[in-house]
Image 1 (spheres, each protein chain N blue to C red):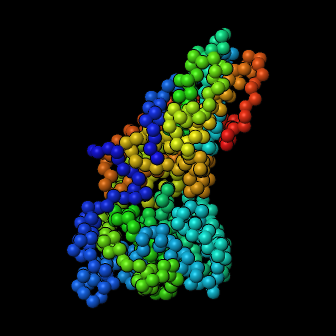
Image 2: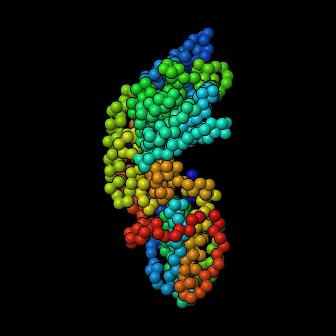
Image 3: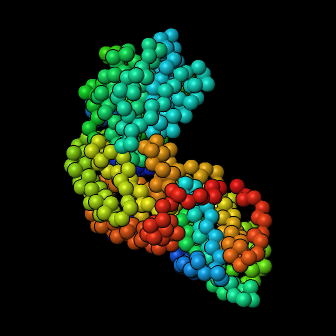
Amino acid sequence: MELPIYLDNNATTPLDPRVLEAMLPYFTTKFGNAASRNHAFGWVAEEGVDYAREQAAKLIGCTEKEIIFTSGATEADNLGIKGVFEMYQDKGNHIITATTEHKAVLDTCKHLEKLGAKVTYLQVKEDGLIDLAELEAAMTEQTILVTIMYGNNEIGVVQPIKEISAIAHKFGALFMTDATQAVGKIPVDVNADGIDLLAFSAHKMYGPKGVGVLYVRRKNPRVKVTAQMDGGGHERGMRSGTLNVPGIVGLGKACELCRLEMDEEAKRLSGLRDKLESALSVMEESYVNGNTQHRLPHVANISFKYVEGEGLMMAMKDLAVSSGSACTSASLEPSYVLKSLGLSDDLAHSSIRFGLGRFTTEEEIDYAIENTKKAVNHLRDLSPLWEMFKEGIDLSKIEWAEH
Amino acid sequence: MAYSEKVMEHYTNPRNVGTLDKDSKSVGTGLVGAPECGDVMRLQIEVDENNVITDAKFKTFGCGSAIASSSLATEWLKGKTVDEAMTIDNMDIVEELALPPVKIHCSVLAEDAIKSAINDYRVKNGMEPIALPKSHH
C-alpha cells in the first residue's frame, strides 16, 4: 500500500490506464482535426470522436446527435443555463434551482439575474433533498427552466430526479441536471428520468480533465440552446471550437468502462464506504451528513464534533480528503452546502468528506479508519471544546467573542 | 497550501497542552474565538509572587496554524514576567512560524488569548484589567 491514500475522488479521479492507452495515438499519429473532411487525417480523428460520442450516448441512454462536447461540466452548465435563458426569453425569464448546487450553476444563475432573469433558489431539507411541494409551489407560467443537480458533490445525496422533471414538465418548463457526480457512478437514463439537458465531465469518471458533455434533447421536446461560443459552428452550432480529440476519445473510453463496470463497482464501493462510515460514526459525537438512503455509492461526509476540519486533515496526513471548513481570513465561512442542510457552523467546520473511487482498496479503507480515529482523538485531546463538553458545559450558553 | 516546517513541528509536537486549575488565584485563563468561526483558543498562565509566569498551558480548536500559534505562545510565556508577556505581538508569531497572510488571524487570536489570560489573572488578584485595543478583525 502506497501513502498518501487518495480519498478525494469527488474532486477529481485518476485517469484509468485503459483510458490513457486509448487517448495516446490521438496525440501523435492520429493528430488530425476532426473537422477536416477532405483527407484521411481528419477522417481518422472524426472516427475517434464518433466512437466517443456513441459511448457517451449509450451511458446516459440518448442518441449521438444529442451529445455536445465541451471543455468540462462548468462550461456545460453555463451553456445549458445561459443558452436556454437566451433561446426561450420570449416564453419567460424564471429559473428554479437549489441552494446546494455547484457554483457553476449558482454563479451562472446569479449572472443571469443581472440580465433580467428571476431565479428561485430552493432550500433543501435536513437530509439535503429538495421538497417537491416547494418546487411545485415555485413554478409559474414564466418558468422556463428547472435545474437541479443529480448527485451532490459534498454529501452525495441523489435528488428525486424523475419526480422533479415531471413537475417541471407539468408546467411546461425544461428540466436540466448537473450530473457530474452521478454519471458513470449510478444508472442515469435521460428518457427514464425525463431529462432535457444534462451536464457531466470526464475527469470525475476516470477520464481526462478539460472535457465534458452537455446533453441536449432533440425529441419530445426538441430543445435548443443559444451558443455561448461563436466560431466555426462545431457541435451543431451550439459550441464552436476545434474538438479536443484526445480528450474526447478519453471521455468516450471512460464512459464505456463505466457502463460495463458500474454495477460491480458501485456494489464494491458502497460496501467499503459503509465499512468506513460505520467504523467512524460509532465514535462519540460524530455525525453522518446528508440522506443515507438516496445517495451516491462512493461518498461519506462525516462531522467530528469539537475538532476543526482543517486541523483534522493535517493530522490525517497520509489521507487525501477534503473538509467543509474554510479556515482562511478571506472566508471564515464553512461549506454553504452543509449550512443549507441546517448544520450549525461549528459542525460544518468539523466535517470531512471521504470520496472513494475505482482504485480504492479495502486495505486503504482499513488504514483510513485507524488513521482518522487516531487523528480525531489526538485533536480532541487538544480541543478546549471537547474538554468543556466532557465536563458537561453547554457550549451554546457561552458568550463567544466572535471575530 | 503547504504549511511551514515550524508550523508542522509545533502541530506534530505541541508544547504545553493541558489544563491549569482555573479557580486558582495564581492562574489566569483566556478563552478567545468562537466555534462558529472555526477557532477557539484557551490559554492559561500560572504566575508566582514575583509576577513571573511559571507555567503556561493551552488547548485549541482550530486549524494547524492556530494550534501552532498557541503552542508557540505558551513556550514564549514561560519564564517571562507578566509585563514582558504583554509585549508579545502577533507579528512576532507570524514571523517565527512563517504564517501566510490567510493565517495571520491565528496569530492575532493567540495574542488576544495571552492578553485575556493576563487580564483574568489581574482581575482575580484585585488589579484593574488592562484596556485592550479592539480585536484586529
